[in-house]
Image (cartoon, rainbow, N blue to C red; front, side):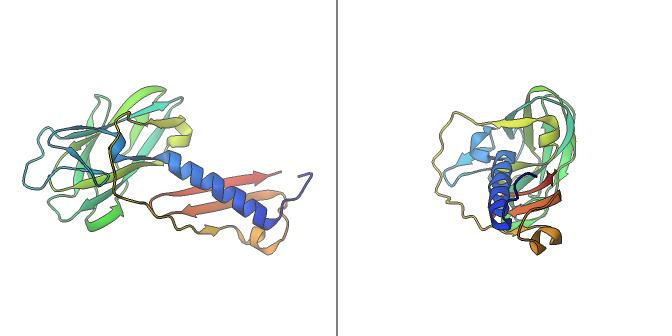
Length: 206
């Protein structure tokens, strides 16, 4: 590098980049299209109400990709018990895969979904109801977003949300970066962990 950045300046830059990446990887459930008995709620989430059955329930998201890659997802959900802890995942009109999300009585990030093969073009990612009583607040790419060049398409429908997300961040880098006041040539990892998003970026300095 012709000019060396201070450790603090690079840390701030990487944090901004990682936050931006994490935000792009995630889409709120309110930006999806629901098919009953899936419903959108004013609290900024979608749910299949407990006791109403799940037949026909679908939450659909639109995504545009410029390349191809295998992708996986995580969902921010409430799944209070073993009778409300799964979806069925489908890309476009392809095959469907059961997704066991894990159990939690407050908002948490689910287990990783089954993988799907993204290709260039516009696609729909569908979460079919498999059990009632589950709530979802967001869906995010766990892997494959960068490789396939994917970008979520936001819904034009406006939904009022009473949820105000809070963000707490932590940043860690390699011991080489921590030990020096200037950034030397090499490869550095930055880890961003927010309340509702996360990302890991690898930066190479020549």
